[in-house]
Length: 79
Image (cartoon, rainbow, N blue to C red; front, side, top):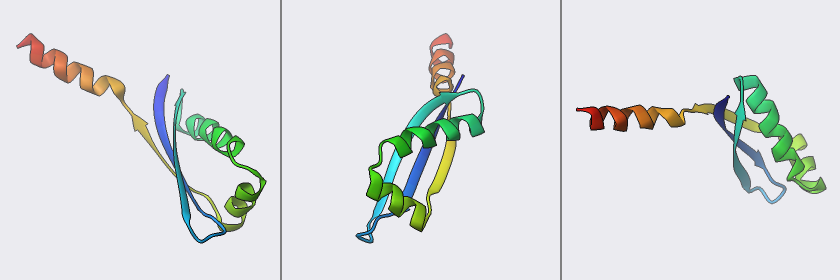
């Protein structure tokens, strides 16, 4: 399983930008984005969902590699 960090942004009715970040574990990027969207939408109330649907939802996703730091420190310790 890979870890993905998915960022969401939409315009609220008060003309403020609402941002949120969700970290999920999934086997692929599309699966991770789908899982994160479900979690994000469940956390919104009725008016927030309406604003999100009306103004659009911006999604940015990236893979987070937690093991990238471990080999670097292990390699430094091995020398």
